[in-house]
Image 1 (cartoon, helix red, strand yellow):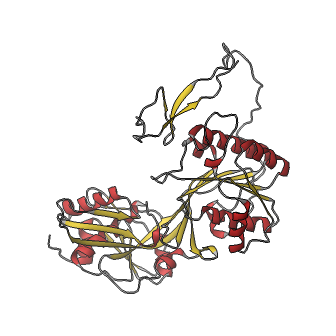
Image 2 (cartoon, rainbow, N blue to C red; image 1 turned 60 degrees about the horizontal axis):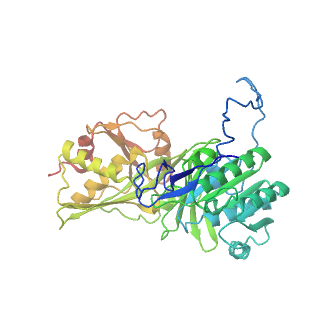
Image 3 (cartoon, rainbow, N blue to C red; image 1 turned 120 degrees about the vertical axis):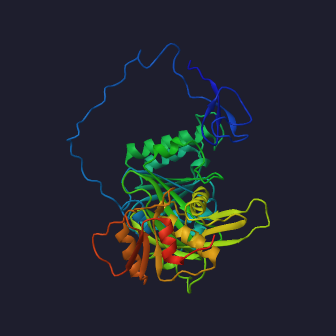
Length: 457
């Protein structure tokens, strides 16, 4: 008889332990280690080398496969993030905070996909079918030929999908699925890993595209073992502030298209509305120059996007001044403050610093360094920079300004929205001329002198 063993697995990071402990040594999370039955080790005395398996077929690199035919959802922002549409037999994992709009987005996508003549099955482990119909009525999708089911038993779901053979199956969510041959509760590491493996293998074997919805932890990562993200072909994150109407769909992994591509949506009473020109939307409330406010010309995936960066500097009554960041990396803010003080002689000691990226978007591009530095100095000096200027460039620890990629695309987007000047590094190489004036600086000190003149420390 197959021998089974008991392991202790961390639900936060998936690390295995020989015994239970209150704190995981791998990730440092408290009370996250659970006892789970391990998979069968096989017959006693049997190893992989003692019993032969079937020989698999091999091919060479010169083999020519048929081109993949993508199917478009009809939602341009979603198709853009996927790399041009849905690839047959692909597995997609969609994660996001609770209430951010994952189910709304996927129900809209399922409705449009079904109206285009494709067969779609929507399986929910969190809501009853009547609740999904209520959302569909609000989204004006009651007439969409989408098949609904409310089920958590993985065996029954796979049997149904095998019989129906849809073009697209949506599983909401992977944490609620229960495999009856795994001795653990739904949502545990082994259950999530098994459910993801079975659904992904089924998608490849039967040629059915599968979309899995995943919950996220307090750190913003998809809950469960990280191996789930390795199993699937595409990982999408749905981002945004719940109190803000903007939503960002970001591809962090895509085997069939560019990673870091984004799609922008606006949450309305009738569901999610796609935004064709996000730069204009993010800058819509910026009317007149204000100190601490600058525009960053960034690149998200293959799309140039302009966003407003806001800074506020105020005297601090605390021994340790506050450093509050929304939409950017707090560690990078600390680095920019250190470079400003060390290389440019502009100190922020005894001052609270608040930095915000308007619109609810999260920036991770190093080219935002120059815009952040300009916003911080503008707020500290109470000096408003020209409203028709954009900023982009990476700042090194020596204070030098480094080159950035796709500078021409940034400038074209700024020119299209009415900006007349741009500040960047002298190391930026421009092949073609644009109608926008480009003001270059070699280092941070020269840039600040060009913008603010002489600054008293």
